[in-house]
Length: 281
Ligand SMILES: O=c1ccn([C@@H]2O[C@H](COP(=O)(O)O)[C@@H](O)[C@H]2O)c(=O)[nH]1
Image (cartoon, rainbow, N blue to C red; front, top):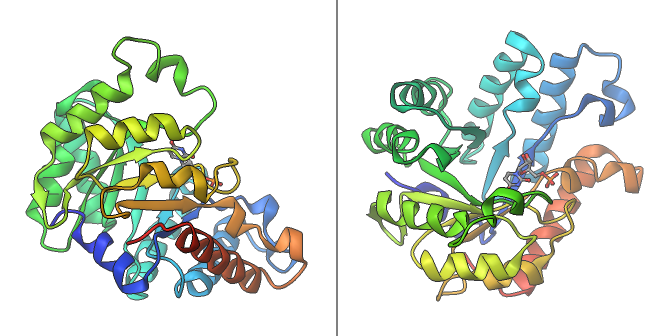
């Protein structure tokens, strides 16, 4: 149970890297451009999964990019969750769901049970009844699942709400994570999304959540680097899974090599960059 499966995968791979699947067909290589969008998305992402598997602890499909393709897109999403798990890659479904209790339970059933993701991202701003159904669904399963609640997001306008109050809402959200999470191995089964773009806020969230696993977007395309990740580490120098999506998926745009080769190299470099900065697993 809990986020154990993710922490174990990171240790086994000696990599804190999560590769995000944010498939935008306009950026696919020429060889996939003649296919229908859903088929191209499936082939592109399958190629990425195999290419990055040696360097990634997990993958994080961004559900929006599959929803935009309608029912065909959700079939592709289901196929990719299954393919990732066959490759031994835990799946963090970036769905950012947040709604009242029974609706949250339905979302949890869909993403954790039906589609079979290992973890799901959840928006905690409606309070604990928007988060607990996901935790309960994850706790019922033996497969090692859990939840990452949005605490301090990486986007430029995040402060408009998350820092608008005193205490700031990211501190309130962090305390909610601490209250709802149950210890399972090294970490709580409720993790926190904490961006790499505001390291001082990340450091403060770490003070409030010494035992939480962080999912950290903002590295790569959004400008965050390994030095911005370091303040988020726990007392063991671990506890952070760093997501990179576009910088890996579209690495071929800069190298003009096969997209799989470019993605594989970009993933290896990101893993090494994080390791050299002292980010442990
Ligand atoms: O605070 C957050 C929470 C989630 N995200 C998601 O992560 C990826 C980032 O993609 P990049 O291409 O590496 O910038 C994307 O799916 C976001 O929805 C985030 O960026 N920040």
